[in-house]
Image (cartoon, rainbow, N blue to C red; front, side, top):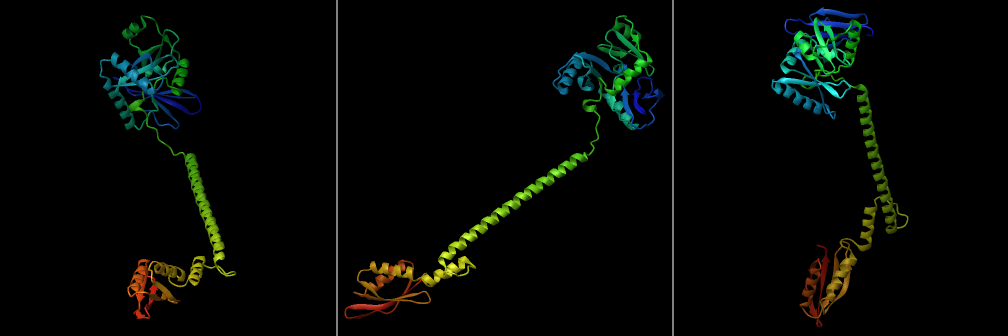
Length: 363
């Protein structure tokens, strides 16, 4: 059975029988009444009495445990006079086509688990007493478990009672299991129970322990993602910086074509603006203003410009001669329609010509 304590079977009370326990270790089986004393590395298996659990065998769906349990509940409801809501149904597996089904009162399950919890016990499994016996190839087997007889057949398991046993076995004698064979059967049932009542609403709650290895892997993964994201951000910044430097270099090269040769480029925009202002003059520049004035003169027949003076303030002073007195007014309005402000002096008439000055400035 291995070193130290292997497992403890706790036989649950029924009728007048008290709690009884069997502790199995390398030296054999120790017995006692009441709750078992605590022991390290102890696997606790609760054993409900045989006459408190009804066992059936049936062919069930194998796609999922939920489907198998649903089908078992239907079969149990048809075979029991107790409402299905008051029953707890558990499905096991023995490696054969027919699977064991245990039916027990839900109230009994709650009572057993509550009493065990008050005693500080939480069994790893609850195995009906007949399921501790080996499954016979034929006929029936019998054994004494904690003072009560239990009978097991290929598709049956029940408490050994004279009239019930004879009825089920048809008068066939059950083979009595020896001590050594029983010990081996108990060890096998403890290691891998063929049927555990702790299913569904009565399943044992497992304590979730922190998986530090997984936490470390997730932390490294998060750090890696963070570093990759930071690297992408840095690469983008570098890319934008290189692009900006390239644009500045290109702008500087273009600026050199518009600035005097040899001039040091400090601020291309400002230097080009100064250069443009020097070329075209202050304000809107001479070229633009002169073009607008001559266009207005062409649109006003009978007028001519006799003098031009582009002033440092950006204003354009023109001397105008006209054939009639109304023409200077028409010229003034034409220049104003071009978007300029025009200040006209007093025009005088001499030798059949009207002359005077106009100052054209930006609005």
